[in-house]
Image (cartoon, rainbow, N blue to C red; front, side, top):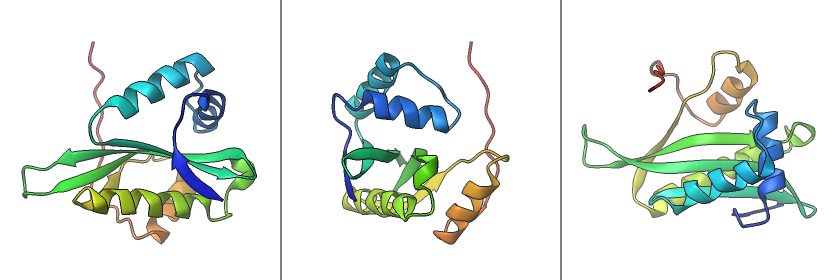
Length: 141
């Protein structure tokens, strides 16, 4: 398995993975969203490839903090294709995100996960993430 950056032409796999995460999008929109995401400063979209098939992705964004003079790295999306879960792919994606975050000067990773994703919670906790708050959301009109 190898980890690489998102490239033009990866939209079908990205759309499939987003659909597995519960966010179905057409391929063209997946490419538009991914391309816009990686065009922003401090973002990274990495793909896990096994046997020439994309089987996972992780998206991250550097976030400056006001409580300390530091950067945090926010995991905005992480998904591994259902047939490839429990094969170390998610762990490899987290490790790649950590390495990228450290290289950029970030001192930690943070993420939000839905209450209904118990399996994901166990995965994150096994990687050293701690539940230290609540995520609240408000839609803007």
